[in-house]
Image (tube, rainbow, N blue to C red; front, top):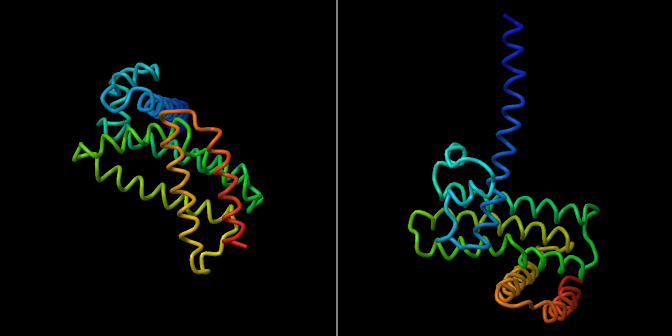
Length: 202
């Protein structure tokens, strides 16, 4: 009896590992498709093909299209948050480097995918509440990371608004970058915001 139980456990381990890998591939493929093709061109079938799995396997993990794409944006946002923390694992860092890292969050594939999801949510009633809740959660986490890395004291009047203004500015630069490469202007803005933060945060 014990041998049978042990065999079942041995079977389950690799199966669960394969399932996690499949799920990750689907999430990464979904973000890439959304960034490249927009909501209209990103179906479950397209994502499944890109991930190298069957449509049935995709729907096993994510029963609906909304499930897939909201999970995908959340997954990559969490990955980026982890990567951002890892860049500055020792805690608060030089402000220009932190500002640049925060701006970089909004100039890549994740932001493009999230932007497509926001546009779709403005027209899709069933998607809107999920995207609104997701954006609020990601926004709160990004704000917490920014406060931590900048060594900001939000007990001081105006500091919370200054940090939020930085993130709003970073999002705006990301939006501008969707249409054109705005790297030169972005560098000047990052330098100016670093000076503003030094004055505001001490």
